[in-house]
Amino acid sequence: MSERPDWAVEGRDWPNRAASRFIMIGDLRWHVQVSGPEIGSAPVILLLHGAGAATHSWRDLTPLLADRFTVVAPDLPGQGFTVLPPDHDLSLWGMARRTTALIQALDVQPSIVVAHSAGAAIALRMSLDGRFGEAPIIAVNGALQPFAGAVAPLFRGLALGLFVNPLAVHLFASAARDRSRVARLIRGTGSMIDDRGLDLYGRLLRKPGHVAGTLGMMGRWDISDMLRSLPQLRAPLTLVVGSRDQAVPPSVAQEVRAILPDATVVPLPGLGHLAHEERPDLIAGIVTDVATAHGLLQRETA
Image (cartoon, rainbow, N blue to C red):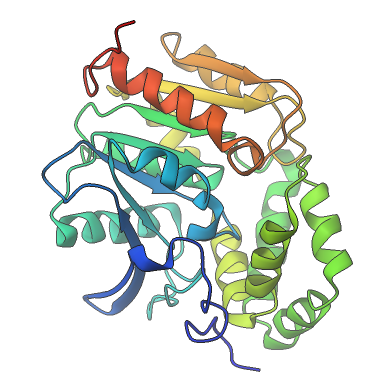
């Protein structure tokens, strides 16, 4: 079994495959999908997936956006078909730095950013660093809370320990061959997704390289500095919250809103952590509303 997902095997019928390209930036080979109008002819949306996912997470949302936006969706470093960085820097700062290099190489300036879970922290870090100007950010079940209390070092240490332990990584990947285990893992997030989605997650989770990238990201995940800087955020922030999210408590959005009173909270009753996969139409509607409110799209008239 090869370490990383193979484009000719796991990617053989990858969602939105025609939009995929591979690009070498410095020492990192990225997989990124660019959909919709040609770059420069429409507003650009940057989609950033969460830990353990890849571009497949946006499989049904991308087509809903690509008629009016240029949609840029990368696999984050070490996940999906983007390789693990040689320096193994999967920290928040490292992810933000690498993603900045990607959008610069593509010569795009995102007009709006949609980010899921841990991707939301990357988006906010980049925005605070001035990478997006005042482009609105939509955080879908944003993982915007550090690991809590005294268990935080233990949790990060456990993830990092698994990352550097090839046997543990291979055991996890082997367990993912059991489709029922993948289904239980997804159900544990509070979401119910279709068989196609389960198959795609299973393909990734069976690859030790993808698992190692996810664990490495979790092991180095420290967003404390970003949260302290959050009051300086200039970008409008919309917090989309699935009421059934079992991975990121819905209360996190209210904690962020206490820091940023102008942030907008949009509840999605009955949806879990993968709300954008369960109801991409609802997320597309929210994106359209935000884009219209900020002058990126013209308001439709009856």
